[in-house]
Length: 182
Image (cartoon, rainbow, N blue to C red; front, side, top):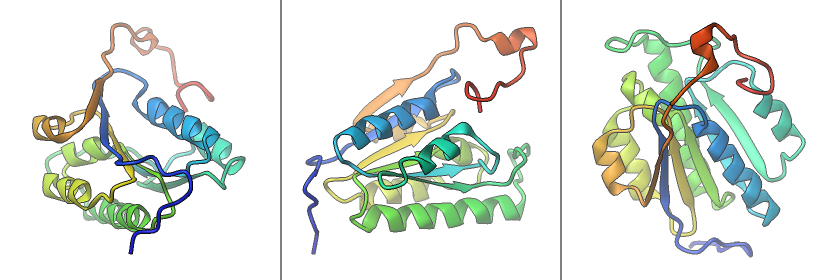
């Protein structure tokens, strides 16, 4: 039996934020923040991320509305064609946890942050991503972020935004800054 919450969003769609530009995770967090203002709850599963980011501290202040769980080591996965078994296992654990959250009826929005990047690095299969979409209940918005979104994913999504890098100060040697990039 599906339990409709008071703040139901209706049908719920599939959104993809992709591209080589900055702002995909930030857009998903902005959506979660906007939703919180309307009493909606968001689950964010961050793939390939195990480092400290500012959003982890911010979410502690609004934990009633936004939950973030990380599924990655504190180092960057660099091997695209033959990922380490540990990285694959962490990503699959994260996908199972995100599916559980999506089917729990506790959340209005499910964000799979960096899921397309995890697919690119062969940590998650395309079929696993499509299963998440197929199993999405009505009334749940599903947001997938990351570079390298496959064309087949773009074709089935309801909304796709591509972030395009025009210019970035990293090219001039600027390092990451707390509160801006992390």
